[in-house]
Image (cartoon, rainbow, N blue to C red; front, side):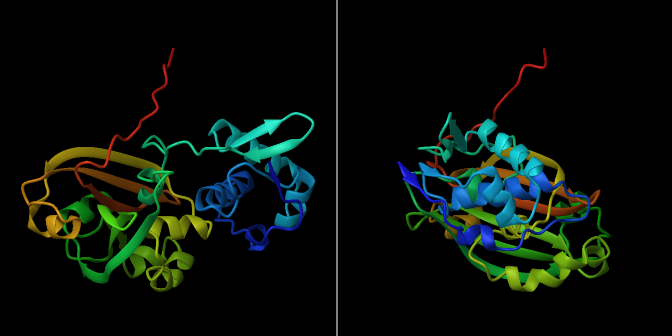
Amino acid sequence: MTTRLEPHPFLQQQLHLAVGQPIRVAIYTRLAEGIRSGAFRLGEMLPRETELSAMLGVSRTPVREALLLLEEDGLLVTRRGVGRFVTDSLPRGGLEQMRPFEVVLANPTMTMTVQPVRFELEKVTDFVSNRLALDPTANAWIRESVLLQDGSPVATVQEHLPAGRYLSDVSVRIASELLEIADEPRTLLASMQANGHVFTNAVCQIVATDAGPTRAKLLNVKPSAAVLIITQTAGHCGVPLYAAKCVVAPGHGSLSITQHNPN
């Protein structure tokens, strides 16, 4: 059993709150990122509620609510009379929640890295204009990355955000941060979530197709190889602002979707 009760460097970072974002969501996001990134080790004891609230500068109520949500998602376990601990093994992320693709495709026994390929301003495609409700003549940002597990490519990710006033009118902060976070070794969605931006009303679609010559080169597969394409479209402040396309190489393994009986 590992314990750590002294101030945690990861918790000393300022807690960013998006407009209208519940505090418990920001706390959940911060702690979940720390757990999945390894800042909090598997089996490690978390600081107590009073200590967490002091470190984050918030009251105990949203801290307690965030911790309960983390328990429901299988990231924390409570040992009565002792405290809350990071689970001994992280649950695989499913497609039922809005997560960055490097989290969705993560394998706890392998190292996942994000390798940026390009970040450019280009004319919108039908895919982008339809999902982000942009004029067909507008420009949009594209960030393309390759996801690698233990150094081998397993997926490519194309992320799109509107440019100019289409973006700044919705979020001045995202517009001002975009150029900087595009250099970070993670997807744009992961960076934006880490900075406190909340995306809602997400839609995920899945389709199978051939890799094609461009994707095949990045994934080191034949152009005729079957791949899985997962798209995400998400809104910010009620406006569609993020569209992504993830192409998963053959042999990656299964993807989970948790189903609930409405009855």
